[in-house]
Length: 291
Image (tube, rainbow, N blue to C red):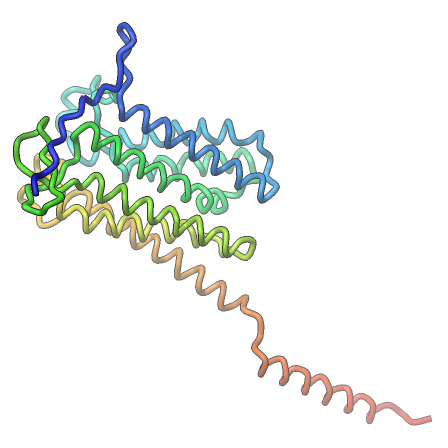
């Protein structure tokens, strides 16, 4: 079986001096589909739809700024400190998903402070659904750009990225896209099944654990993203994923603890309670003076 040869031009079309990139189209699709999902959530839960436009503005700024600063600080700080003007050159590539997650969390916090009708944890839970689907679109965009490719592989589905070299490689971008799509369906199904009795923080915890566990293991198939990673036992992406997974586990543990405290009493408890009430009632009748 011959390996797929991938040499697609990252530019979808050109209109005069303007170039439309596949990555940009898919990035935009992530926001459009996410907006549609959040609109359905707002309608379902009776939240003011007028908040959606400013919410998406906060999300856009938080995603881009956080992802860019994450790349600058986590992957190549020496270069950007010596070339500070390149920090804002987002069009040259370089966005980090961990930084994007931090940026989204901060943006939602600021939004919730201005709009108390949408509490912070409520926003985090609901936004986890479109966020992970957006990650799926973005990884497909990385595939079109022939970036974040995998290590050389002899597997039958390995891909030759001709913009890199002639070696068959893991299509790690597609691995991640598939994982994120499956996680999206799990989160969405959990929301539909558990609402309105959905514990606060559950979707956020599932998002952090599932997304970054997948990211941790897929890093073993990925080319180094930073020049200093070669001598490290774990990649930068894996090191950043560990505390994120821990935060997700803490959220899930808190959900389980709260759910156990709020759980309704079982049949045995109800029977015992009824027996106690009956006993108290008899005692009261006996203590009352008879006419």
